[in-house]
Amino acid sequence: MKPHTLSILVENKAGVLSRVTGLFSRRGFNIESLAVGPCEEPDMSRITIVAIADDEKVEQIMKQLNKLIDVIKVSDLTGNPRVERELALIKVTAEVGTSRAEIMQIAEIFRASIVDVSPKSLILQVIGDTEKIEAMETLLRQYGIKEFVRTGTVGILRGTKAQQGNK
Image 1 (tube, rainbow, N blue to C red):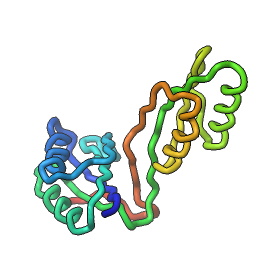
Image 2 (image 1 turned 45 degrees about the horizontal axis):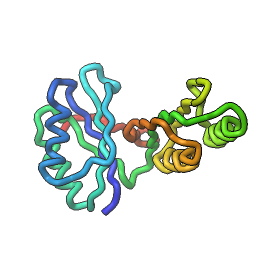
Image 3 (image 1 turned 120 degrees about the vertical axis):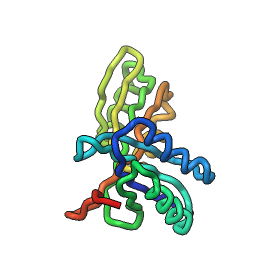
Image 4 (image 1 turned 90 degrees about the vertical axis):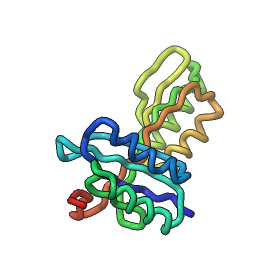
């Protein structure tokens, strides 16, 4: 069992996301990460799902996804050269003085941006792979994380090979 990143090109219509995620839940798969947004074609969206399963079960769910009418193409990015990223916003308790300076140093090390400053907190924006986000979260816990939100993973194949196409 390992994480699989599935890229699903779908028609941009109401109810498609519900049908896709419903297929996962009916088969007992837990979705670890989910991101959806418009893509290079104006009438299509790309759904990126990370689920933990063995190769055989992922192959089975990909076949079932391809049977859905609004699904154009399903690709398993796992094992292929790819770029994957997440975005996280982290609101941290940051009193003026030592803790604020330390948090700013951590932000610099992780190439995070400070996107909001208030008298008692900072909001940091960090972009990277899952491990980078989790490492930064771990370091910031000692200061007191007030809120933590993150997108799901998005991914794209490296090189000239594209994920688009017909079933």
